[in-house]
Length: 505
Ligand code: HEM
Image (cartoon, rainbow, N blue to C red; front, side, top):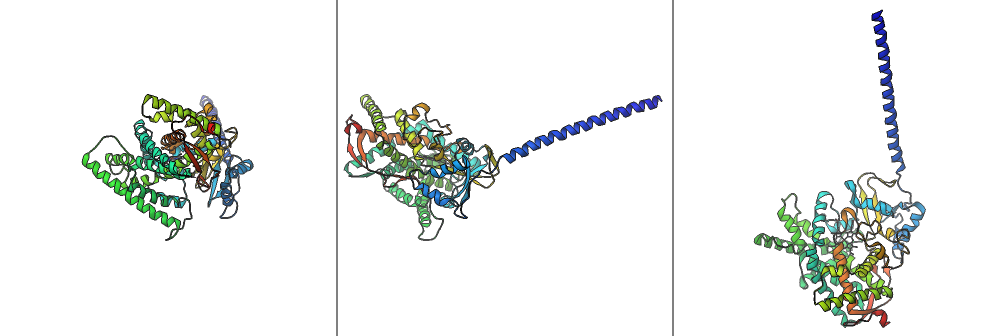
C-alpha cells in the first residue's frame, strides 16, 4: 500500500509536472504568436507609397519637364503631395521612383545607416563620370576618399591659402568688366570659379593649359543630361571624346607630379588635391590606395562645381539682390564697412573676414535655399527599406527632393519670397533637416565651405567695386538651373565711393 501510496503520489507529481510543462509551452506559443503577429502587422503597415505611374514608358515625365520650364518647378511635387501625401510614387525620366518631400525621410535616406542606399544616376552620367567617380563609389573606399577630400578642403590652412587665389581671380574678372557694355554674369562667374577650382585641384594657373582644360571641359559637360546615344556626331560621343582629352592632360600632370614627389621625397604641405590623393597613393599599400586612374577620374569630376554649381549660386545671388533693393543696400553697407576697416588697418583679408560677414552669409543661405541648384539626390534601395511607414522596395529608386522641402510653407514662411533676414533667427546649421543645398549625411558636399568662401569673396568685391542694373531675365529649372539670358547687367564703377546702389536710384 505504502508502495502503492508512494506510486500514487508519484503519479500526482507527474501530472503536475506535465500540466506545468503544457502551460509553459502554451505560454511560450502565445508569446511567440503575439510577437510574430506584431512583426507581420508592422510589415503590413509599411506600404509602397500611393501615386500614379502615368503612361507606359513615358510615365509622368512630360508633366515633370513642363513644370521645370515654369517659374515654379515645385508644382509637380506639390500637386502629388496634396493628392498622396509627402511621400509618393511616380515614373519620371524612364524610372519608377518614390519621391520624398518629407525632411525626416530625406534625412534617413541621406544618412544611409546600414548602407542600404546607393547613388543612382542616369547611364549617360555614369559613362561620363567614369568607373572611379566618387559619386558612384560605395562602402569603405568612398568613406576614405570623402574624408580625405573633406578634411583637406575644410582645413584652415587650405582656406587661408586659397583666399588669395580667389581674390585674384575675382579682381581680374571684375577689372575686365570696365570695358564691357553688357556683362553676362552667368558666363563671367564661370571664369572665376573654374580658374579657382583648377588651382585647388592641380595648381594650374592662368595660361594655355587652363584655356585648354576650360575648352574641353565645356564640351564634356554638355552631355551630362542628354540622350544615351553614342555614335559619331551625337552629343554623348563628342563629350566622351572631350573627356578623353581632359583625362590625357590630367594624367600627364598627375604622372609628372608623382615622379617629382618620388624624387624629392617631399613631405611638406599638401598644396592641392592631386598632391593629397598622390600622397595617399604613396603611403598606403597598393591594395588600399586609390589607383592612378581613379585619381584622374576624381580630378575631372571635381571640375563640375567650377563650371556649374558655384557660378550659378553667384549669378543667382546677383539676380535676387537686383530684385531686392533693401537687401542690396544692406549687403553694400556691410561690405563697405569691412573694406573700410581693412583699408584703415592695412591688413590683408583673411578667409574668416569673408566667412563671418553675417548679412552676406544670410544672403548666400537664402540664395541657396531658393535656387536649389541641386534639386535633390537619387538613390537606389539595395533591400526593402521602411521609413516612417513608407516601404521602399528593393531595387526601387528614391528621390529625396530638396526643392520641395526648401519651398514648403510648413518649413519656411512665405517660401517664394527672397528674405535673407529669416536666417537671423535660425542660422544656417549644417544639421538642419530643412536646409540641405549641400546634401547631408554620408555624402555631405565636401566643397561646402569653399563654395561659401568663393561666393562671399565675389559678393564683397562686386558690391564694393560696382553699382549695376540688371536687365529682365528668368530662371529656368530644367534640365539644370540656368538664367534664360545668362543675366545681362550694366555696371558703373563705385570705387572709393560710399554711396549705395539704392542711393543712386
Ligand atoms: C554651391 C555649390 C555647391 C553645391 C550646391 C553642391 C552640392 C552638392 C550636393 C547636394 C552633394 C551631394 C550629392 C549626393 O548626395 O549624391 C555634393 C557632393 C559633392 N560635392 Fe558639392 N556642391 C557645391 C560645390 C562643390 C565644390 C566647390 C566642390 C569642390 C571640389 C564640391 C565637391 C563635391 C564632391 C566631391 C561631392 C561628392 C561627395 C560624396 O559623394 O562623398 N562641391 N555637392
